[in-house]
Image 1 (cartoon, rainbow, N blue to C red):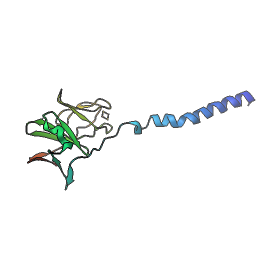
Image 2 (tube, helix red, strand yellow; image 1 turned 180 degrees about the horizontal axis):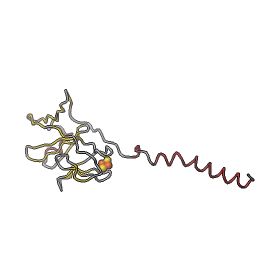
Image 3 (tube, rainbow, N blue to C red; image 1 turned 90 degrees about the vertical axis):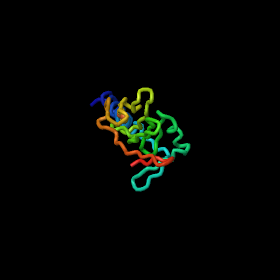
Length: 144
Ligand code: FES
């Protein structure tokens, strides 16, 4: 190996070592958004209680409004009707949001769309959102 060949190989090897961590990191999931965990209702015995008089849930005073409690999205679908389901997209765990304009639940990360019952309408999400039972108890919602 002559001097020119040695320096050429050393330069290529050094460049690969320098770039390897950046290339590996760009492929990891850690750059994808993660679900948020905003404050919200209380959870006792597997039942989450939402106080509808709380400012945390002011959006639920309006039909078409939605709010989060932990990893649950609660949507007001009618005067006395609410639905609750997991807010974690089944594709790569981004937080979904409700769109009242077309009555769909959408993931901002890769475009998955779910129905108001949590069923996948458009992928890449592979599975439906887990749904919960919602009961109205005075000014509270009991989600289980
Ligand atoms: S994380 Fe929701 S579509 Fe990818």
